[in-house]
Image: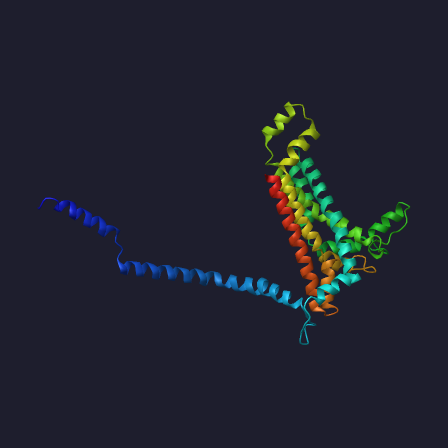
Amino acid sequence: MQPGTGGAELMASVVGTFTVDPRSRAAAKRRARSEGATGWAFVSPSVVIILGLSVVPVLWSLLLSFQVNDLVSPSEWVGLANYRALLKDPAFGSAVSHTLIYTVLYVPLSVVAGLGIAIALDRKIAFIGLYRTLVFVPFVVSAAAQGVLFSFVLDPEFGVANSVLHKLGLPAQGFFSDPGQALYLLVAISLWSGTGFCVIVYLAGLQGVSSELVEAARIDGAGRWGVLRHVTLPALTPVTIFLLLFQTINALQVFDLVFVTTKGGPLGSTTVIVYFIWEKAFKTFTAGYSAAAAYTLAVALLVIGVALQIYRRKVAR
């Protein structure tokens, strides 16, 4: 063997090791394309469903909001006329007002009540699991079932509520037939069902509150309210922001409870935005006008969501 031959052979073997055969590279590419095609074959039904049931209707309704359309005859492009008409429509203004009243009452009350009940249930006592379950049960009852139930209970002529009031010597109430009571009764029913969700979420959040911080606060002389104010509430801030956003979105989109109980009445006192949208689309068949109202609501929800996210990030810093 010539001097240096062994080193050259070694270098050649090393270079050969890291040199990729063109045929192997082509085979690897074919395998990658085959795996990609197989993956798309599996996810394509889901993609088609998502596009067909969400993206396409959203884009179609956006175009519809710029048209006059009754879902039967050919549509006519009117630009922003539907949106300008909404600003001048007193019925839409009333629907916005009713929705805001409902939201302003329901959201803070459900969050505050949920926090209070969660703190009361965050302890080790007998039957605590049963109490937590009973609090959560109304949340899993559908709004349609709630509406039917309370329609019977609050019926002004044959309902249980007026029977109880009569036995107590109190005057009968109109309930859902009284324009001054109907909207507030819807808030009360929603609180009965929706507070349980806040309770469960807050109970989960309370498990993450540092016991060391609580103990340190107590050693420093903080009482129950001091611990709640300076330790528990700051730790629950992300949970509170989530619940405010979740409950606000639910409140602004309330429909099924209204549809089952009052149908927007009496005298339009419970007509909220989503019921207004449904009424315009499927009762008066002004689909373009309805789509414009729907997108107005969507923009409002987007603004609220972005504002709460910005606030959450500022708090996190």
